[in-house]
Image 1 (cartoon, rainbow, N blue to C red):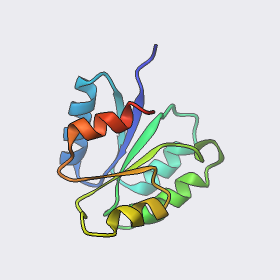
Image 2 (image 1 turned 90 degrees about the vertical axis):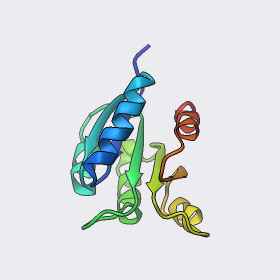
Image 3 (image 1 turned 30 degrees about the horizontal axis):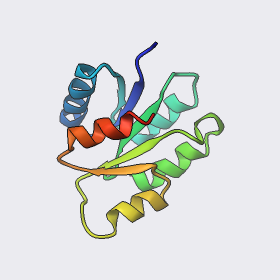
Image 4 (image 1 turned 135 degrees about the horizontal axis):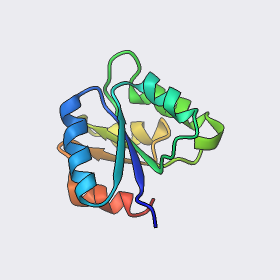
Length: 121
């Protein structure tokens, strides 16, 4: 059985490093993009991706704009997308879900919760 492959989209390389290291230690394969446009370009290819972790607050194109665009890529329409954000105010989870995210997790990331979400992929 192959490892689940997770695409991490985040403009902060420290977040990519921390998430990748954590997930690799739990037998996930990780790839990353530092902006949403690069991720959209990658997702239009045949690159294997089982789920996406996307930072909601990025310059140029944020997660709220990127998620619907990802969902509009025919072969990615049912892709599990987990919104990862430092925004943990009342209503932020609902806003992420309305944008098309499958689930929401706030920073700092609760690793057990993240692994629980990814186990459903």
